[in-house]
Length: 251
Length: 233
Image 1 (cartoon, rainbow over the protein chains, first blue to last red):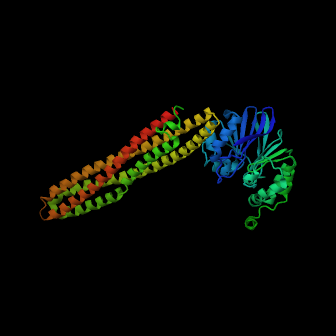
Image 2 (cartoon, helix red, strand yellow):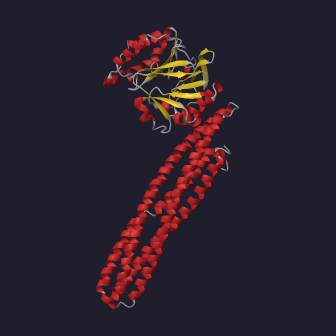
Image 3 (cartoon, rainbow over the protein chains, first blue to last red):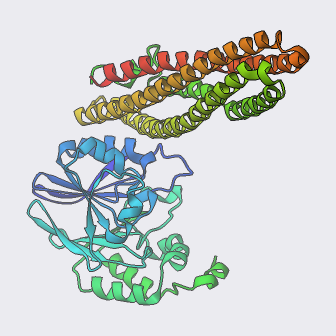
């Protein structure tokens, strides 16, 4: 697994760890985003436990292990959070784990000893070093308790499963989307099936459209930058989602 | 961390070796429980036998007075067996709980071991990972000690059953002695004594099997706990 810096200004960095070459095929590929600033590090959706060895080895080549102060879990899925007990073991009792309030009891099944901080429905702001990271609601996209993270200084949006794509290995060489129209094929099925409702989708797009976003980083697949962020929001806004049982006929 | 997970499996193999040793420990504990599986049925048989013996003793009148007293003592022994069965079930519950916790720590240790290997491929090591392994190994030691405590409790139950065996054997002998002076009731008393000896034999086999498994589990448990202690010490 390799870490790529997608934003840097002094000690303020955003990194993405992805494409673990040793990942078994039956484990879904994930992107682990990391924000470092002022000697503190926050892991955004740190990944599943099977990924932990490769992720830790790659991460600590870029940042000191003792700087890891926060984990952010966008929702409850195991590919997001099952590594939690291992990070807690390694980072010690002071590790602060930001968890959607509704999932704390569920995520405690992975680690009842973690120090969880409940994220309220409306989101919150977390100060990391000198930067105020905004945790914004994304409920029902796809989880009923779901959040994204926006860094107004870096203009980076970590979007969790929004914008996620299942990119075939032969297309996965670049970190960023380089042909949006071609990329749609890899994310359309997922968004149609997984995203909860048009209302949730429209409210979220309305909220993030007001943000200055240079890079949108989902938890799976390629990242969007520049105009592709707008292209994604436009495409997502026009997609039929939340079809319920009808989704079966859409594949 | 003094030795790391590698130190636990003294012939190498790290977490795999630890898992193998914990499996042996848990396997022997389960064998000991299985040895006591029929305890309840034997206790019930012994209780019915004591009731029948009391009826025979009643029919024998004065010749059965001593046997009547012995059957009352037998029922007391039956109660001790029933209590041992109840206590075994509680100990088994604890053992499974410790085994489940141990499995989880082993899984986490295995992932940490893979982390160490990933770092080694980069020509690095990391103090935080060593500390995490040490923490896990300390938790593992605590869990193994919990299992050892369960085994000790099981050993205590085995001793309780052994004392019942010994007392029942004496009762069977005494009933046989009383039979020789019981006149026409002698065959009935002899049958009671022989049946009780059969039950005593089954109980003796049970405690022997459990005792062997318990001793092995005690030895293995203490050795694994000590190895875990060395690994995180």
